[in-house]
Length: 316
Length: 271
Ligand SMILES: Nc1ncnc2c1ncn2[C@@H]1O[C@H](COP(=O)(O)OP(=O)(O)O)[C@@H](O)[C@H]1O
Ligand SMILES: [Mg+2]
Image (cartoon, rainbow over all chains, first blue to last red; front, side, top):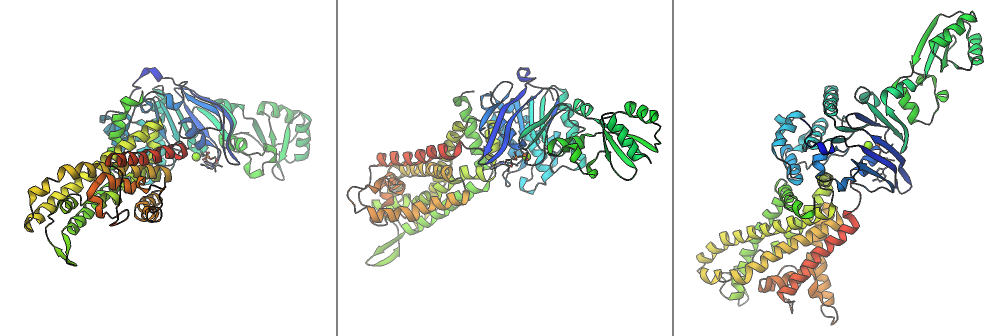
């Protein structure tokens, strides 16, 4: 599969100052971010963070309270032939249970004026060829998700917007989706994929947009986020108090984890090692704990600062 | 890009949606059954206070046989229209539709046209039933088939128009209500219960013209077929609008409800 039309290859998704209120609930709160082509961008946040709402507004299914969204500089409704430019999978499935899977895609092809020869291609791509003549009502959640994906790919679009596409997929399905998205991104497509499970996405995404309570918490390449996250050192020592005092004196923040173990935040092995040696402190164990993505995610999406985190949440 | 080139495929998509779900087929099947019932009743003629099963002979009787699908039109055509839009809300097909074609007015226009075409189809199915069951019965009872066929011109166009316009009217009701069950109940309740009550109460009042109500307008279009129609005031039709004014009234009912539905519902957020 290749991008059919070079014109929108490299379409950038832009969300600017987006706010959406439902009565007293502010689902999206002055959210701005950019999604670049040729990369997979993970749109991450816990349940209720406002991801689905944002994507629905992006696709012109809902109107924002304020702010705007665009794909390739255009509002969705102004994109000529949107099915050929943008493929979307939304959280709620949109099938008639009595309609056969193939007929669902046929309906889409007619509506969008697409060549029906694509139907077999996308059915094969998502592995539903054998089940294509079954009624969708009898489909499992994972099969529905695959069918939604087939529908999104029908127009061979250069932009993909996927809301929790791994919902209902088994581990093999998730791995398959990862490979598919990788492949599609390598062809220069723009891929925005939301998830509330960072673990599923960590190996898939290039960039992340992290939201919580409708607000942007972080945006950038996954690598930058992880390297920006601070390193901590876990030290097991019989001289806990002295070590804590020394660390504090050098400007670090020690946190006792037990009788003989302390976690020193914001310090590298290169900095802490010499400090321990010059003070002649006995150490049984000295381990670097770089903050992993999951804990960073939790940290960004909860209001707790690292210092307020209970010991169970300490990264290891 | 503009509405016009997209419209044929949008209408084709609407027809395809109808074709690939059971609801519209059930509606047509029920309409054909009701037509069969209508055919049977048009052979039941009272003479000297006794009901006989005998061939219709007068022009009015023959037209009633030709228009045996009148009840089907009144009852099932609006339901068909209701399904056209409420099925999309119910199963969120509207999301898929709007993703493929985000310009909502176009989508609604395509639905109006799709409902009209299926209304026509339902009407044709009803007349096929009249031909298949009515003609053999008529010859068996010794009636004149050629006299009967002379009623095609006076009856069929008006009846088909009634099927088409009532389907569009139902589509308008569905746009207003969105909920499938509520839409079906409302469509049936309006023509079978509420309108007859309104007609009964207000027809005696000089300054209120009940003839513009949907069922009365349909009676005007269907002409003498509806003289003993099921909807409306049975037996006491009284003065109706002219057929063309009835058609205008029914078009306005269909488009009016659709336009109000567009501004109140159809522009809203879709999940
Ligand atoms: N149609 C709606 N009416 C009222 N509240 C809504 C509606 N849609 C979403 N919300 C609320 O907006 C917030 C964000 O929801 P959502 O965008 O679905 O989050 P996410 O997809 O990140 O889980 C939630 O508090 C949710 O309850
Ligand atoms: Mg969601």
